Length: 159
Ligand SMILES: [Zn+2]
Ligand SMILES: [Zn+2]
Image (cartoon, rainbow, N blue to C red; front, side):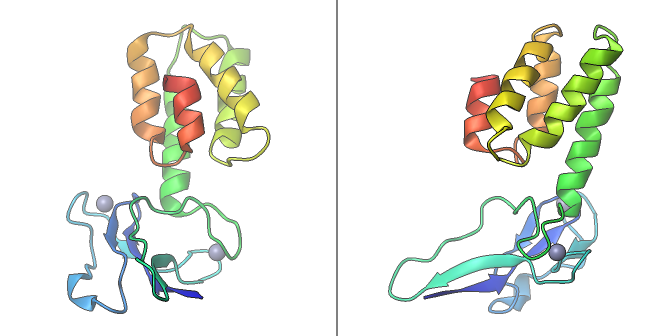
């Protein structure tokens, strides 16, 4: 058996407090890293964001990275949407790519964050298109996406 506390996370995805209920003294209305508003529930279905996980008789799990999608309704959390939007904008800035390549890059971004069966395909496409740009562009995407893609994706794209 396990149970969850509630996590308080800012709109940009900084985890403020993963023990919102148990240790409310560290709650913050706004993020001290970026100044954004903090939330404790999904903006779409208002389900609490899962925080610290308590297990019986076992060491519990602290939250390191915020979840990308709501476990209740499946919608991306604001920080996931924000990072996707930022990555899409970066893709649009790449003049060295054709319109088709930009489109493919953006489509593969959608799959990259989902961590499903097509993620590997998307990662391969993404990497292939990125190879036409400079290394600083690849690093730019890495900085944006580092918290929203899985370890497997990170390894296959950025090594
Ligand atoms: Zn923040
Ligand atoms: Zn939801």
